[in-house]
Length: 240
Image (cartoon, rainbow, N blue to C red; front, side):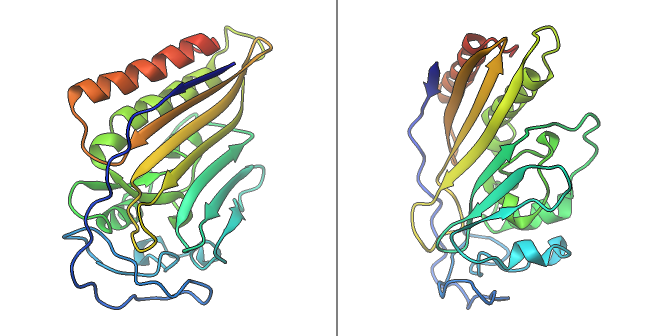
């Protein structure tokens, strides 16, 4: 069973007019002057650059372009894809899990990634922190705050609730993926997200998928996305 939801993706935020030269260029990063949003802390940088507040996992910050980076944590079957321009464009969770006691993510690291987008952006996890996603650059992109704290969170919470369902024997979230798209090769701000989860509930398999813009939406658009997510979860046998 395939159930889907879609909403037209918003346009990427405009780039600043005269970005300074890229800093901290990685050995394998493409020779591209990436542009952030207006008012961003750095208007241009190498997408696989070291984020000062996120140092300590240089193996993630200096990747080969166009490759999957495996999560180094024992027993965590997650991977993070870096696109041909050196930007994160997918988080993929096999053996999906969630944190029983979420605690706190590294807000400094998240904040710095969000600042590449400028005012109104968060450092958004591809694989959510409460879904055991790490606060690493390869799992973080500038995400519009209203989306991150709103409809995208509804999707994340719904999949976690499905994974937690104890009253339905055999409930499994087989895979969980979040892909992002970029409007241009020179921007670090995604213009859209697509979340997909493959779930098995009482032996029946379903694919839940939802598109999200990375821009401001009105109340009607927000409700449409929420309704789509909840309809899909219910159709799959998950508790929303």
